[in-house]
Amino acid sequence: METQRILMRSLAVVFIASVIWTITVSAQPPQKVRSPCCTAVSTVEFTDPIISFRKQEKSLSCVMALIFKTERGEFCYDPRQPWVQEKVKQFIAQKNKTRPPRHH
Image (cartoon, rainbow, N blue to C red; front, side, top):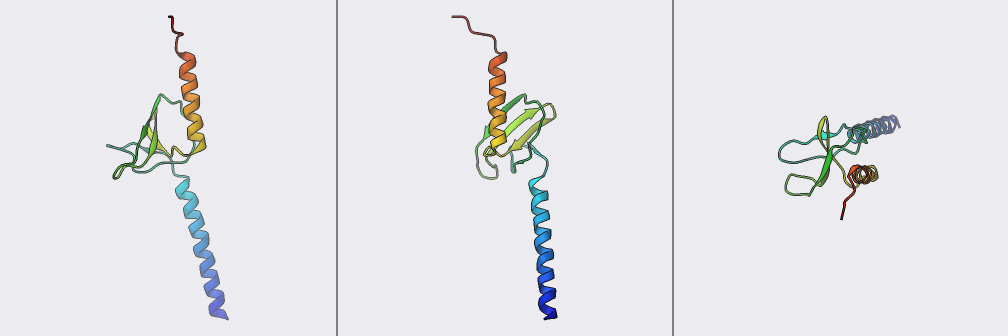
């Protein structure tokens, strides 16, 4: 009976530790692009103004990523995140607004 109680407590500690580790890993700050490509992406939302962006396709050690260029550098994000897709839409809309009208 005592052995079972110790085992249950140990499992509870392992479970809690794994939950804390998972939360910590998913809340990592954005990974700066290192040559030649992104090898990991962040899912943490940011507020820095975007200068430009580009898409990176998956290949060998490179992961699929959307790379946002800001004043602090280029950072790798998961393109499947809804907030990332929204940032791209907002950036494109802002660029279209600031572009002078074309004369035909």
